[in-house]
Amino acid sequence: MANWSRALCAFILVCGVASNSWADDPVSSGTGFAVTADGWLMTNAHVVHGCERVEVKGKGVAADPRVDETNDLALIRIPSAESLTPIAFRKAPVRLGEDIVAIGYPLADILSDSVKITTGNVNALAGLRNDTRYIQISTPIQPGNSGGPVVDRDGLLLGITTATFSKKTADEIGITAQNINFAVRASVADLFMQSQSLTASSGQRAPDAQPMATADLSEKITPSVFQVLCYGKPEVQASAKVESAPASLPTPAHVSTELVNARGYDAIGFDYRMLKDVSYSECNATCADDGQCRAITYNTKHRACFLKNNVVALIRNSDAVAAYAPSMAAGVIVSDFTSYSGVDLPGGDYKRIRKSNYLECFTTCISENQCKAFSYIPKKSECWLKSSIGKPRAANGVELGLK
Image 1 (cartoon, rainbow, N blue to C red):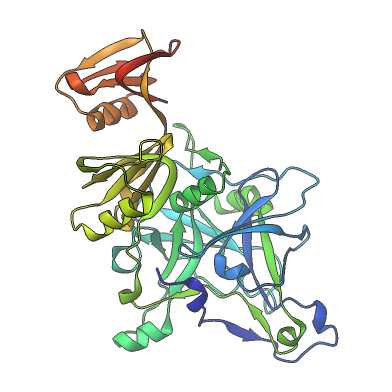
Image 2 (image 1 turned 180 degrees about the vertical axis):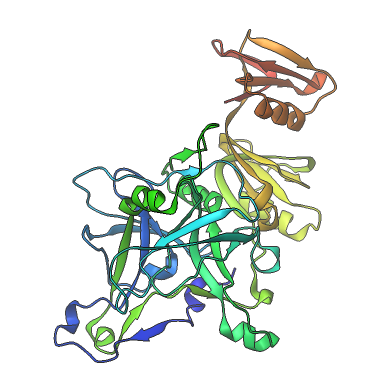
């Protein structure tokens, strides 16, 4: 996706008369929400872009901004005397048509300055040109909504409000597009947090749980959502008050084809080529130039690059850096497994799969509740599923996956 800071062409000017106290007025506002208990909030990159100071209303000045402009995400930290209640990221995939709720602070200078909620549905499982970093949503998006959470009926995070179909694009294609809005997937935000050494809480619906009513959902989620205020230079503040509008998506021709990076993960898929003694940038560039490459795993310890023609999941591996095509994001499982080479867990075996491969071993284990770990032996093409975890020991030629 093109640099989001260049896409902010949909700002709406509000209250153009300067105030006598203009030096203390924010130049724009958006929404953020708690992702950790110790003060970290997530918002959009364009909400904090160009700010001299960022303040979270009622919580004080934010510090230590972490920005991912490619995916229009940002993390900011607020001083918090008491623990925040983070919104849990949903483990289950997004479903087409499911009910959703968006929470934020739209048009706070025109309407009330309190938090507001809107309801809608997931309209599509991808954005422009099948960019699966995004979901398309029908919840109305107004200036000030930017950076707010989009949750399901259990209050679990599905995405972050980020963009609307630009009027410029609609004029260019000759179609009056109505209520076409987009949210960055929670899985993309989760990877961004991990790249910053932060851990998001996650959850899933209990088997006997019932979807929450909108009022109950509001009471549960709104304490975790905050208005984010951007303060600029005095000469900028004197001109107009602006609320941070959703970024206008550019025309489809500008959609990025860069790989989505995931440090500390191994991409699980079919390897078709290996490169030895190369850098990560060389590995990444080789995949980008290869028409069949959909993902890579780069081993930092051995400087080895594995090119893959598909990817189904990410598995934790401290010696690896994974990257995959944005078009594959919707189907990628960010798993709780950790990968180890040259390690085995004796005992606990309940199933052996002959003539197997690592991918089959992994997917079988992840689909069976009793499976706590697996050992894969490449030379024998053999997979052992384990229902209990013993004491690990060194074992050459064994690939261990541990939940």
